[in-house]
Image 1 (cartoon, rainbow, N blue to C red):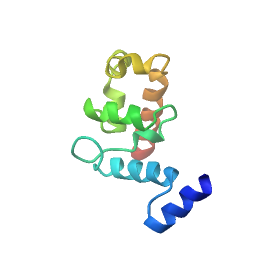
Image 2: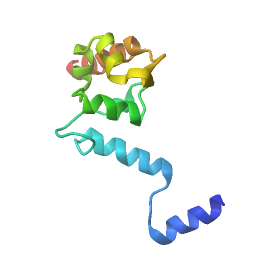
Image 3: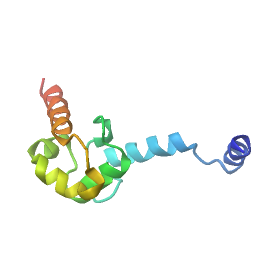
Image 4: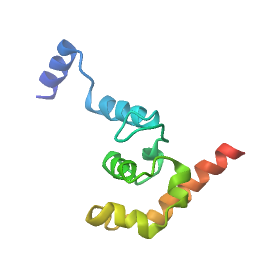
Length: 104
């Protein structure tokens, strides 16, 4: 079945599932994801996937700097039930590291 799917992809020039995810990440990084304006690739933060990234973008958290300014409680509220067990403090710390790397 996988082989058939790959053959159909080749015939229709579609992207493989992993390539589609990378393409969505690239699009979000340049502002082509949900919402408007340029943003950072929030999926570079360990624990943030595409769905979580999309929720954050819709809530106005578009960059690492935006995430560092958000309280863990606000991020949890944005995620709702979806974010149960999410280590948002660690996400914010990772975002802070990315911001610090840019300024160094």
